[in-house]
Amino acid sequence: MLFVCNENFERLGYVGKFSYLLWRKKYGPFAEAELHVDVTPKNIELLKKGNILYRQDDEEAMYIYYRNFNDSNGVEQLVVKCFSLFRWTDRRFLWRQYDFDATPEMIMRQLINDTMINPIDLNQKITQVKLAPAKNFGVNVQHQMTYKNVHESIEKLCDTHEIGARCIFNGRELLYDFYEGVNRTINQSVHPRIILSKSRANLLQRTYEDANNDLKTTALVAGAGEGSERKLASIGTEFKGLARREIFIDAREVSEKKDVNGEQVDIPPDEYQQLLLAKGKEKLSEYAEFIGFEAELDVTKENTKYNEDFFLGDLVTIKDDELGILMNSRVMQADEVFKEDGKSIFVTVGKSMPTLPEAIKRMVN
Image (tube, rainbow, N blue to C red; front, side, top):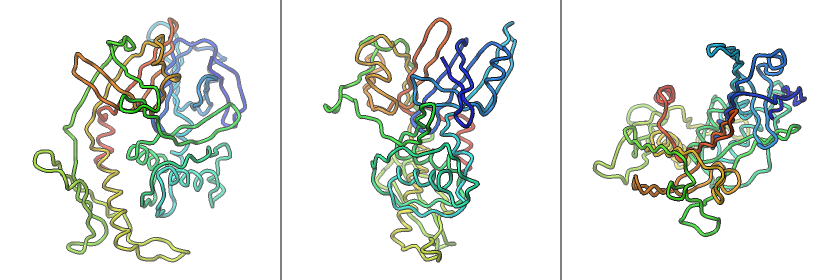
């Protein structure tokens, strides 16, 4: 059953019958859903753009951003598509320069606090948004941001530092939260080990892909200045020979000045170097080697049940004797698919190849 509420979290009703529901969770601020229902006056009224769908057995909630009426199969269907409420961050951008020396978790928390919870401009405030208690993980990084979209900034930090983002919703309250997955691989003994393998009969189908055509290992990062006076930093210079794949990163946007008590002051050279290195690490993460393993899980198997034995963002072990694969990787996506004949769960471990729009976006940013 799917419950429906408005943007003020006032319950409007529920959807008890549907022909298809995809509930997709990702390790980052990317959750989404798609719902197919019969065209009825009740469904048309309930499933309006902006309204929110949520399940009692899941902590995320999704808002409707798209509707489509379709009768191509001889049956009138209303198709709605949704984004996680975390996507509300896409409605804000940074109106000034930020100079951070903090953990990625605390950086992202400040971005949300300053633009949605306690903004200087009260017109930016979204009263429904709150922050979950901080978990205080990670190490400090120096990072500068100016006039950036909040959602895109959080997305890059999550990708670069392998951090999960979610909105915890209980029907009354919404909490934006950041977290790290748990290591459940064969290389540790603290937690029960999760091994996904056809030989263990916990996989029904699997698809493996790897590619390194866009891989970059070494970057020259160029910041402020002109000609020989331009500030430079490099990352990944330890790579040699064919293993070394170089890229130039134009980081002119990284300013040499920062605000201190309302006054613009020069950033010390060593601190500016760290800002350029952070920009280089962020960009190189977009050019990583892609290794992905997509699998349909047997949800009846003990010890490897998704959302019971392991969770989104956890590190698990993939073992495939036929393909000669033994790898530890992170659970990056989980698709719960509900149809009239039952429920299936598809899990994606590791990152997959970027789509054409993603590749174009990467090149222009």
